[in-house]
Image 1 (tube, rainbow, N blue to C red):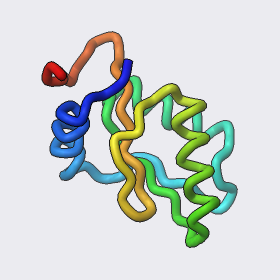
Image 2: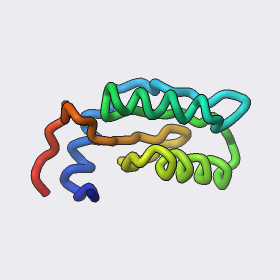
Image 3: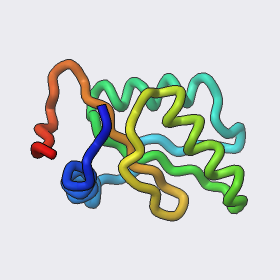
Image 4: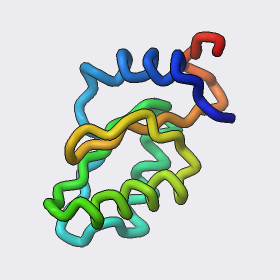
Amino acid sequence: MTLSNKQKQYLKGLAHPLKPVVLLGANGLTEGVLVEIVQCLNIHELIKVKVPTNDRETKQLIFDAIVRETGAHKVQTIGHTIVLYRQSEEKKIQLPRS
């Protein structure tokens, strides 16, 4: 499943008031952090993850690894924050048709 521009815009609007639910610490992207991200995606479907690093390349590598390992869709990145979406079995968020 790929997200259309219309669907991404809709998800961005829903994500705007959200606070990051997962903050990466000094250890970076660990197995425990990935498990926490997956659990949050299962519960909320749409989450923000904050990666506090000043190196752009490292930050992009972490974002790519999170998307790859969780199977989530990257809706957008804003500074140190990435917005992720992954549909759960309950389908809490109804996406507009593409």
